Image (tube, rainbow, N blue to C red; front, side, top):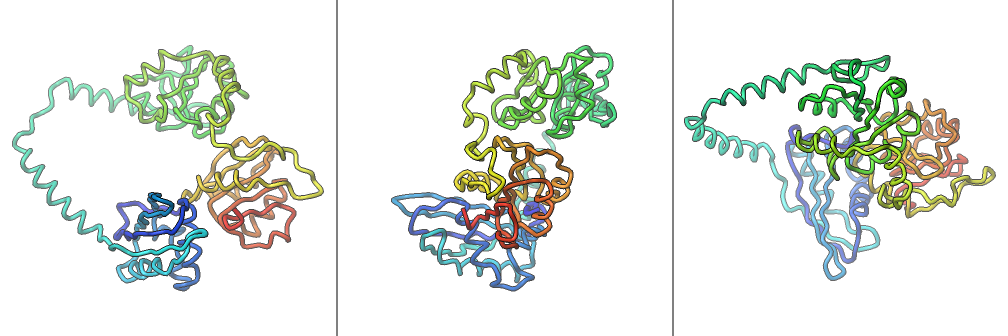
Length: 399
């Protein structure tokens, strides 16, 4: 939702912006949606076009100099030629961004198919030049390729949760736990067969039971999400060791050398727990909700810290995702906004405090949230009056 594949887009709108003041990317995004809303009629409503995938994710690049902001807006489109240029022209009606005066000028509308055709011609020429110089792979390369393919075919399903796993789970004394199927495939590709994936960030019962019988080593991504998985899994399962991928990298993308180096540097889970406890909050994640209202009074709406929610909502702009938070400002999970209502229905946790998502607050979402004792809803916009519900309703306009 809200994204469009470069393969399916036909045009790209390139727009220059000049702003008399300093603004941020969310201010520009908000101005685009807010000042074009209702301008072109329902069929060309920009927000609906993005939701249906006919307009892609809006990219904004800004450069602040001497108190003014210049930049570019790039919008991919799979609409036809006439509709695309109408959208482009509508952008030039934007006169203010945030509190500042602004001038928007469409530089060009690029036909991607022409660019692709040019690329195909040049690439074909290059391939033709190399064709006669190509040599057959040596025997070692053939062996490596066949071995890799066989290992990729060895993925199995394990336990009542049918988790993706390597073939050696039952026989191995030590089992490596990763987040998903892609991580399992990468480790199998490099010869590690005692691996199992959790299929997401929630902890399956299969992994909990496995932790009671095997030595469990948790292998997580080298980001703040990895830290949160360590905290969650170690609280419900008997984890023995922890491994982290190199900073900023995911387990599914690291090389054989990086995998074996990480395996050699595994540490006891108790040490990692102490590091996470002693590490400043900002090093694990951005501050989301202040703790001074972790237990709000029931007789009134909770106190809201707009700066925190603004930072959180900015992270979600264009992702069509949703954060679920507890009273201690910890992320319990992230789900697609399209699955938000079904996720709220399934929540049976009094610790859920707030939901922040890239979308619109509707009557249905409010009704379900009230039944689940959720206190705060934060979204791009709202279709209900905040006075109609005891929940605190916050939109991007409020922020």
